[in-house]
Image 1 (cartoon, rainbow, N blue to C red):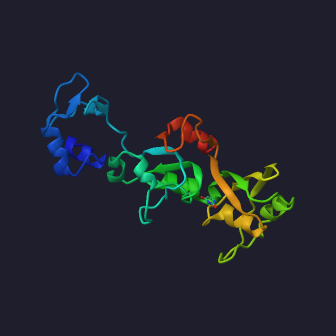
Image 2: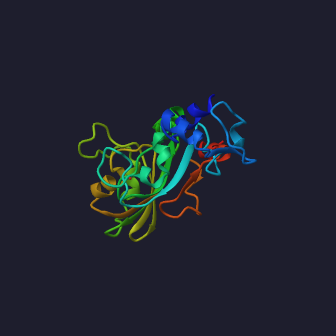
Image 3: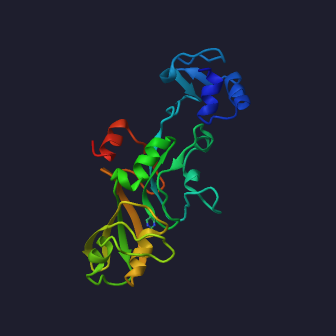
Length: 234
Ligand code: URA
C-alpha cells in the first residue's frame, strides 16, 4: 500500500492532506529519516509527528463511557467520538459503537471497524452477555428475578417479549442485570415495568471481558487479540 493511501485510510487526512503531511516532513521512520511518498519502511517503522501509527483495521477499542455523551453522531451534543482523536472518525473502514449505551449510561463501550466482530457481539444468538449495574430509586420488591427471567416480559411498544434476563440483587436499591440483547433503554424500561426507576446505570462487562479497571471515565484503549478471545469465552 502507498504511504498516502495508508495515512488517508487511518484518518490522518484526505489523500491531499496526507500528501501534504508527507511533504511537510512530519512522517519519519524510527531513525528519524523523513519519509517521501514512495517510501514504505514497514508499518511498525512509520511515525507521524514522532508517534506510532494507529493499528490498521480490524481495530477494536474499549472505552469507559461517561454520562452526557451519546453514541450517535446524529444526536445533538457531545458524542463518544469526541473522546477519541479526531482522525478515528475519518478512518476507512469507520469505527462504530458495538451496542450503544444511552446518553446517561456509563461504562464499557466497545468500538470497532469490523462488521463481523460487531455482529458477533450484539447478536443474541452469539451468547455474548452484557452485564449492567443499576442503582435504583426505590427498594427492590423481590419479584424482579422472576419477572426479568421469565422470557415473557412485554415492554410497551415492543413487538416481542424480552428474552429471559439474569438478575442479582446487590443491596436494597442496587442490582446486576444480565442481558442477551440490547433493546432501546432496555434496563431502564425493565425496572419501570416493575414500578422502579433507574438512577444510575453502568455496563460492567461484555462476554468474558470486564471493563478494564485502569480506565477512568472518558478514557479508552485498544483491545488486544487475547482480550477478544476472552470476550468470546475462548
Ligand atoms: N439499558 C438501558 O436502559 N440503557 C443502556 O444504555 C443500556 C441498557
